[in-house]
Image 1 (tube, rainbow, N blue to C red):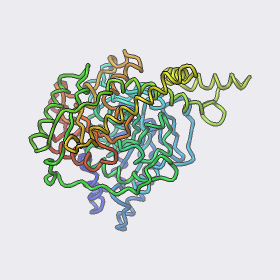
Image 2 (cartoon, rainbow, N blue to C red):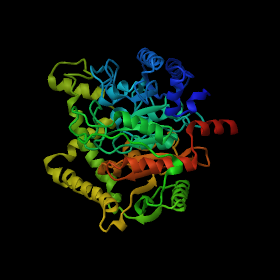
Image 3 (cartoon, rainbow, N blue to C red):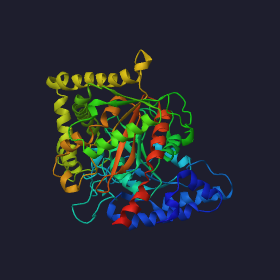
Image 4 (cartoon, helix red, strand yellow):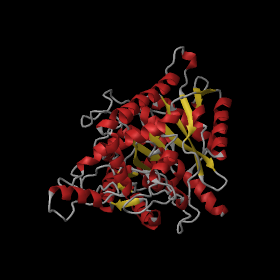
Length: 508
């Protein structure tokens, strides 16, 4: 394994600065490795010409001692639902298979301004509708931790940002961008043994992110460590005049204290009882309990809390998701852009055939269900009621984060990210997309409903040698404390996806 792959982003850029490493050579090796591991299907499209040009420019800046910042020369992958200028952006669908945006998403433009090297576009579920990255026009993405990559026994990477998670876990890049609507960053991060961050809604611009559910979509970040995640967050966060939903308050770069200086004596940890749910594996429960004990032994206050509307959350999420999908997918009519059917005998038939050919069954089902729920006779009973319950779910979080008196407050919620280790493809594929999402998103989607930040961090390996992760959530714009506590836990458990994977191969 290439030695520099186990370095942090900070160590990598320090290596560039003192001449130990070359951004161009690191990028060339990353592209070579991506081709060697093509069987993972992590990338839909590599962009070698663009990447090597960016790497060469970075190298010249380092030679002149004029590096742009902490991401200059760092290899990063981008999910295929973020617009990239002059590079195909397909959402892994036939509908947008030939779409080449004339502009960059704000996240991509800010990464470029920071000097990052964008390697290519990663695989995903079509239009981000899924929890396994198995519903892509380009085929499923496989988990690098799989015992066997050739048969249907391979493990799923999670979804819908499975390509980004798989690329980071395999060491093909130092970080990757995903999107998170109901857990689409944290779910694959959990299964692939990497860190997955969902920032506060509005902290990172959605401009250029092809929408799924506007009121919940958040650009997410994958990396192999919490500090690497923070390096990317500091580069992409902040107000954007092109996105009216971004928080207008200027973003202040976050700095994490050294692990040995982190004091947990004033930190209050909440354990939501509702997350101890049906389907939670004994190994995940044991991991959850051990980390809670670890925090308590370090001086943190740990107590059980209640989020009473959690049980209804997955149903509310499903309803709102499908309603917004029906609205967002209406723009793809085969006229302005996107796939256009060859039969043009009438406008109505052109619309119908273009959409029938351009969308897969999962997307069609959500469109039909969403339109049904939005019918006049159903609107109040489903959509309006779901919005009311969503408010109750958000209030549940407010009651534990901002109660009066203050002694009842908690600062961080500790929960599982996923209920089990990564399932085998053949087991996952036996369920419908709706049933898959109901199970996979149970622990993650409440944070999207409330708009709060959340992070998934890998803790240990299961008895079968697969990553087990936990999720931390905090109040809106409390990323500083969230990442500080996550960094402390990370240091205590000592999980490194590349090092652990090498150990597994050696023991096998």
